[in-house]
Length: 417
Image (cartoon, rainbow, N blue to C red; front, side, top):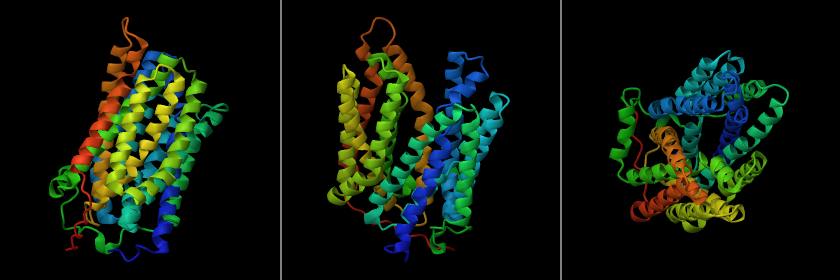
């Protein structure tokens, strides 16, 4: 075991990694409120084409990650986490700089592809937590770093909206500057978390996409957890991509009302990830916390999808937000299932699965939503995608209850050759 575990170094690393994720979330989210407006400026404000291009830009970012995330994760097992963090922050900064200077949509598309090909900071940070944190403390640590990411995503859009009042492209310049600060932070202040004795040998061919996914085959305890991860992300996509349309259609929410909802949700996310998730894992254990979280998500989303009024929608949304304790518990169980020299590959697979849902789920759920609100159907049909998410969460809870390991010891690291 890494001798730096159970020391102030481990606790300090969690704080330092959290700061990096805050900067990463801030850099990326500062442009969220203005990207559709920038896209629209190249299309004479045409709403339909603007919506299509925003969707294509999301796919251009997520699709490369499906293939590259496992490869980047394997590279971090070989060369350490810091090089991948630096590459990722550089990719984010380059994308935002291209956006800031873009004379046409091609530049925006190129920026999203570059960012997708190099995006590895979150996976590297999660692997860094596993490198330096004792297994029994990982749920709390994962919750803390996830909370820092939520904080960055909360602050970024508020800052971006304010900056856009002066100049539509100013948020992109500021985001690029924040990414540059993040890269400088990695170079100058962030220690390497992966000890040299736990790195894979350069003689081992572990870099290909297929090699990365063989991890699921060689670790039986990992397969059901990967299934729960897939169900969890699909459930998240069913709500995340549709709730703005759903609340506007069924409750008549204005952009201001929805903005308030997003702010409350982000604040709850920080609270749940930063404090509740760790406390639940210590009291119940990661397996029970995983089952409880998936169940809460399912119950909350069921209430959201059926709520006839906004007053009844809010309690369901709060319960679903509490279900976010599922993420740190799942991350901890998955990290326990692999060796110290495989944490990067694991996080690359996690990112690849999440990216795959980001490509497929929006297309499926938007089509289902469009069918649900067409014709003479009742407004209640608008909640069908969120009800699908509730079903997926319930299925995830069932899979976790039936197959998630109660306790397992990670396999020993492979000795360098």
